Length: 200
Image (cartoon, rainbow, N blue to C red; front, side, top):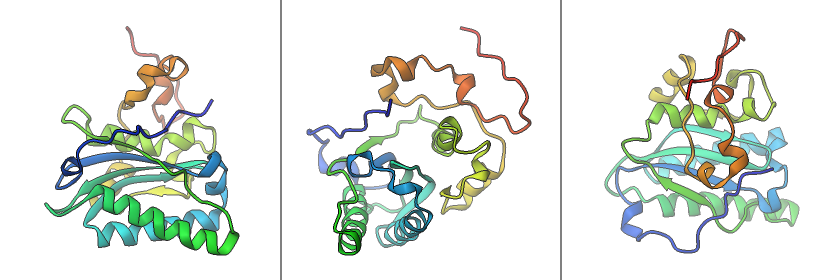
C-alpha cells in the first residue's frame, strides 16, 4: 500500500517556511501514476530541481525520484530562503511544460512537508530518502539507482559513506503497516550480510 502523503489543508504560518531551516518534502505525481519510472522525465526533473534550488537559495542534501513520487531533503541557504516559493516554482514550471507536451497533469495539487527538528538527524533523513528504492525492490543498493543523489558536498560524502540507522517518518505512527517494519529491514547493508533486528 502506498504511503499517504496528502498534504494537510491547514499549513503553518508562512514565516515558518522562511530562513535557514531544514525540510523533508514529498511530492506525488498526479493519481500516483508511475511517471518517475521514465528515465527521460526523471533526469529532466532532476535538472529542473537543481535550477530552482539555486534560484531560490536552497541546498538539496538528498533527493530521490521514485516511480510515483519524489522526496527531498532541502535546507534554506539564507534568511531569504522560502520553501513555499521554492516548491511552488519548481512544481509550476515543470507542470506547465509537462502539460504542454502531454496534455496531462504532472503533480498532485498538494504536497507533504515537515520542518525537521534537532532530533531529526540529517544523515538519517538523507539515508531514509536514498534507501527508498532499495525498500521497494527497485535496486540492491542506492548507488545502483540512477534517480537519486545530492547537490551538496555534504550529501555526496554521506552517500559515498556508510549508511546509518533508518529515520522513522512521523506518518508511520499513523500507518500500522509501515510502523510494523523493523528498523533492520530499512538498513542498507552493502556487504549483503544478515542484519539482526534491533532488540526491543
